[in-house]
Length: 230
Image (cartoon, rainbow, N blue to C red; front, side, top):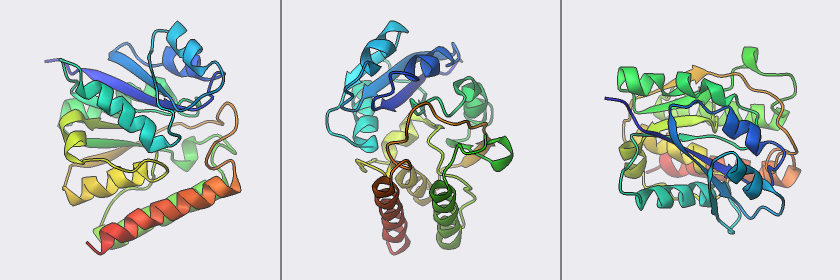
């Protein structure tokens, strides 16, 4: 039986990259859902031109956008088997989606992270604060939960029913780490697939600013310590 795959792409002002992202997504995907997170440019127009479903979420925040995509899917009659989350900035290689979902399809793994490993990263594609933040978060998850994660990479795939069971709630920067912590708590099977990573098109809305980096760091650590003492 073939598995139905849908892709959720949160996007804020990604007019220059969004078509590239969508065009490189393999044809095994049944629907690409772009959530325009209060974009003020041509992100929505450009996404529609290349065949994506476009939703609007005017409350700014990565989690808000992802939750909007999930709400849309929940209202569909035919539910997918797998959800893939992907950024709209073209820093990931969407064509690697087939590698990302392979452990779910072939090995019945619940959750897969696309890990931005150093040997496959383009120079400068991750800021020093991103690299340190990833290291710290995954180190703490290993310390508190025995986790084997090495990255908080946003390119990730999860069985749809397992995603629903996580009851995701974070509205902003903590979305990725919340998913990983809840996957650990619920004892989901998981693995990582090494992924290529390149310099994004445009400026990062999070790691590209000091404020964004600090807020993201605080949110991520907050989730980890919250779950450590539950």
